[in-house]
Structure formats: C-alpha cells, structure tokens
Length: 425
Image 1 (cartoon, rainbow, N blue to C red):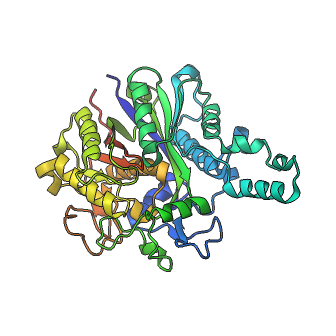
Image 2: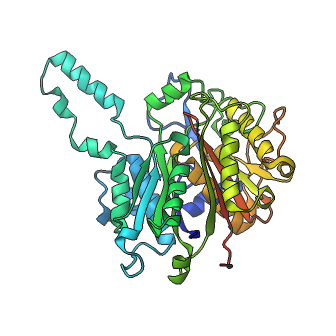
Image 3: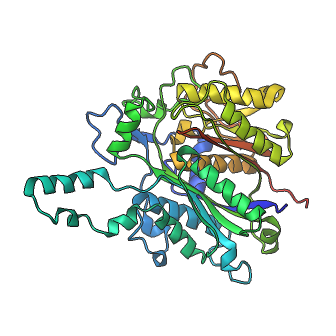
C-alpha cells in the first residue's frame, strides 16, 4: 500500500495568519477569542467569537489566482492552500514531477449560501416598490462568490491540477473527511499529490442566532471572552464559534522523497463513521467516536500503545466532552491513563469545517517540537472527566504518533492517525 506523507501546511486562524504563528499561539496557550466584529451584536445573547484578524488577501494570495470571485472565507482557504504548497516546495512543480492529472484538491467547507441580509434587502425592495426587477440588484457574480467549489477551483488552478477535486460539507468533520479522502486517493493511485483541509466562517448574525437558539454557544463570557472556551471544565457552557482555514499537502511518500520535499509527518490511518443518534448530541456511550478511533488506529498498525497524544474534538459543550472522554477510555482501556489529551478549541474556538485541520497542525507541531499544546481554562475538572488534558500550559514530551478527532452535527465522525517521519521503507 502506498505510504502518504504530509509535506506542507498552511493556516489562517484566530491565532495567526500562517501556520507558524498559529502553532506559536497554541504552544503559548494564547486565546484568539474576542468581541465579535463581523456585525453589530448588541442585543444578541452571544457577542464573542474567535475571528481571523488583520488578514490581507493581496499579501497572502498571488494576483494571478484571481481573487474577485472568492468570498471572505474562500480567501482564507486559498491563502492556507498557497502557504501549504510553498512550504512543500510544490507551488511550481514541473509536469515531469507530477502530471497535472496526478494532482488534486479535497476541501471541507460549509455549503455556500447567499447572505441572508442581502436577500432580505431584495425582498424589502420588491415589497415596498413593487418593482419586477428588484432581484436584479443581486449581482449574478455573487452566485460564484457563494459557491463552495470556486475556492477549490482556484486552488486547482494555482497547482495546475486536473486530477480529483473533492468538495465536502459534513460540518465539523469536513476537513477530516477531506484529508482522509485525499489520503485514500493517493493510496489507491488516483492521485500522487493532494492539497487537503478545510475552511469555514459561520460568524454571520444568522449563524450566531441559530447556534444560540440551539443552546450550543456559551453566553456566559461576553465580558470575559478569553475564558469562554473551556473544554472538559465543570463550568463549560457551550462552544465559541471560530473561523479560518487549514490546508496540508499530501504526497506519495516515495515520490516526495525523490523530489526532495520536506516530510513533516505521515498519515497512518483514517476512520469515518456515523452515530445514527441525534442531530446535535453525541451519544453518551461514545459509540460512533469509538468506531472512528478504532478504525484509524487499526489501520495505522500501531495499536493503542503506539499513540502518545490525542488531539480532542473538545468543543466545551457538556455532551461532546463527556462522550469523547467515555469513547477515549473505551478505545484505549488501560492505555488511557498514560495518554495526553488536549483541545485546541480552548484557544482557537470552533473552526467548524476546518477544525480537524487545526488538529493536524497541533499534532505536527507536537511531533516536531516535542511539545504538547495545553487545554486552557481547565480550572475545575468535571466529575468523570479525569484524563490528562494538559491543563494551562504546554508540556514538553516526545510525540511519535497522534490521534486527531472531529465529531459533527448530524452525527458524522472522523479520526486520523498522524506519525513522525520515518526513514524505514
């Protein structure tokens, strides 16, 4: 079976507008949560979010790519993909290295939809004036800007890819599925190089209101945003919505070595399951998560003893943190007590479709720097949540392999195992 290397990574997140700065924020335990800036949230039950700051698309994306049909979140995704290609030394590969048909893109993202406020404005104009042409004030080009596949197309153009193009919308597990399916495409010979990951931004007033009415967001920390996201803490009260993008370059390991690419790590296993439980809740027995983790670990061949670090989904909601802890204990049994588990969402918020991509960044950083990022704001452990969640500060320790989890609304689960670069063949 073809081995699959990770040769590049890029990121635009609430902790930084590149992968290096994002890793530094995670390692330092720095929060990216603050007052919401995308709209006036006065009067809303939630007025905070983990948002991208000071992002300059012109500096992050080459002019030749064409930015005019990219939405704000699409720009995040394309910028992360471009950084990943550059870090993999793959931004200008000759056809002799990989034929265009051997290159592809796989991305998780929310399905594009028109901005509700724009539609309301159009409807109001039609209702108040009776004008038959009221809908013409909604430019046709907006349809392209909202389309989920337009950023993927831009990514394909910048790497001259004519191979697989996979757009996935499975909510919070989207980037997990995208990376996993890109891994499968290379394993099965459908591609030799894939850019994969996720991008998302659910910070409109409609998104905030919807998640608030579901009871999914914390509304207790509007005046203290840095302490709002508190996975596994007894006082957790919901997640903090985030935004951003993370992309990785995956390659056939032998081909990557032959062209002298940097090998940051290796994808060793992938699991994908469905809970068939409830739309917004994780099953109390952790069943779907158990199957996903077991599948990924089983494929890796490492066994539970070979996993050093679990990058938790860790949303800071009551049900998810409880269910994930139960699932980890079931999967790892006696090995659960020696594991370290940490939650990047405690600092970056919930990047929804991009969340597992952020977990891969955390895992690769831990492997490279022998340093596990912390779970911040874990001040009062909850009953039964008694694993080692690396509270408060990062922990120096060697990490050879990490398991990364993502569990989504709708019951979709993904797990990946990522390992340190190995010289053996």
